[in-house]
Amino acid sequence: MTAPANTGRGPGLFSPGPRTRIREEGARGALIAFVSTLIFLALALWLILTAEAWPDVQRQFFSGSHFRAAWPDVVGGFWLDVRMFIVAEVLILIIALAVAMVRALRGPAFFPLRVLAVIYIDIVRGVPTILLILLLGFGIPSLQLSGVPTSELFWGIAALVISYSAYTAEVYRAGIESVHESQRMSARSLGLTQVKALRYVIVPQAIRNVIPALLNGFVSLQKDVALVFVLGIREGVREAEIYTARTFNFTSYVVAAVLFLLVSVPLARFTDWYTDRDRRRKQAMSA
Amino acid sequence: MTAKLELRDVGKAFDRKVVLQNIDLGVGEHEVVCLIGSSGSGKSTLLKCVNLLIPIEEGAIFLDGAEITGFRANPNQVRQRMGIVFQAFNLFPHMKVLDNITLGPRKVHGLSKEEAEERAMVLLDRFGLVDKVDDYPDRLSGGQQQRVAVIRALASEPELMLFDEITSALDPELVAEVLNVIRGLKNEGMTMLIATHEMGFARDVADRVCFLDDGLILEHGPPKEIFTNPQQPRTREFLQRIVEAGRL
Image (tube, rainbow over the protein chains, first blue to last red):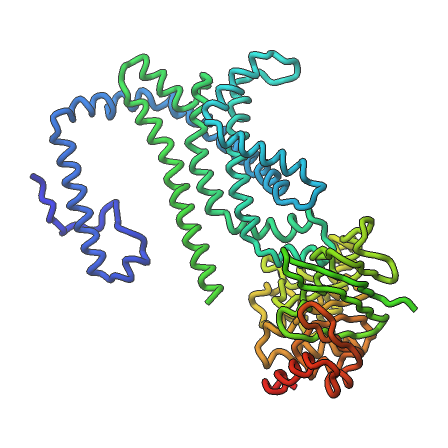
């Protein structure tokens, strides 16, 4: 058995907790957190590595040679995932904001527009994203309409944009509703139209309030772009699948997972950091 | 002579609760009218109705003799002609003082950035706030914020100003600096409709005082009459309470 109680080493890779928490609890708290993490990790590793099935698991999922062999193709595919993510996210942020602004317009004149926005959001949110991808990605090219793109990639991204814009529009809407009514009132009292009041006064404040939620959406989309693999698009997951089909070894999937983690974990950490900073700032302001 | 602003038989209810009824009120050119009355008497609602921020249900409101509450009136154009200042300042927190002031002139009245900023600087200078031009509102004291709010309204060069208890949210020592701004406006001949709890100020500055009670104008007249010789028992009661609170 390994020696879990050995604390003679410096802090490891998994330094415990955010810094503020450690400072509060003092050096003793830090020591306890460090030791308990070490014990936990050692136990977990010991359980895994001594399991009877471990050699099989390692060969099938964590084979070094397969990792190296699968890497170039999966990375190439993953680069397409990244590009799809960036293109889709930019479009989503713009379209969702437009939809949310339409929903925020008041008065009978805008009734039809508001209804359209609600119908769009309800329908799209009620349909699984994968279904939307299949419908658009296979369905529309099959129509062979003139002047309409037939690329699966185009329609795959379009489906993602349509789906995520509906969710993101609701995020924006929550932000718009979080801005106090008196702000709208004083903007309108200056003679600004509804649209100008939204644009110059309400939306800038709303966006600040929902940046953490928007960043969460980034993390989610960054993974969901892989769904377009069902259309046969050779992105990261598809490349991994091809490798597995050829070799009957699943390490290529782990390669893909590692690549997604390399992007999504920093994104998630950044989101947390930003949310934390934002909250502290608001507390400081109200103090 | 037609009044600058005229309310004829105006009524307003929220759900079933009547907040304004049978309001007849005229404000002449260069006249200052103060609305007094306890909280919930309808002063604030009345001002918001005049600015068309709250739709009225009965009666009509006229500006220079033209109806502004009718089907054909364009609320945005009406609001361009009058300024309103609120109790809670309502400055735009994401904009610097200068941008708060230039927003209306630029985006509503079509002034260039330079013209709007020049106009803003003149006003800031007049109200002693030039050094705050690049600050965000949360860096300012309540009195400074409220003066910026007044400047923001004035920057659109309104023909008429509405003030909705603009000193009620201020610390006592900051009230005077804001009231002096209004006194200054009176000297320039600005037409004003002012809801206020500051009775001493109302007596000073008002040409006419209206006492609102439960959505009705119970009594109105020159401040001297209302404050020294009120006719209605409700007015006497109200003023008595103000005197007891040491506010008159």
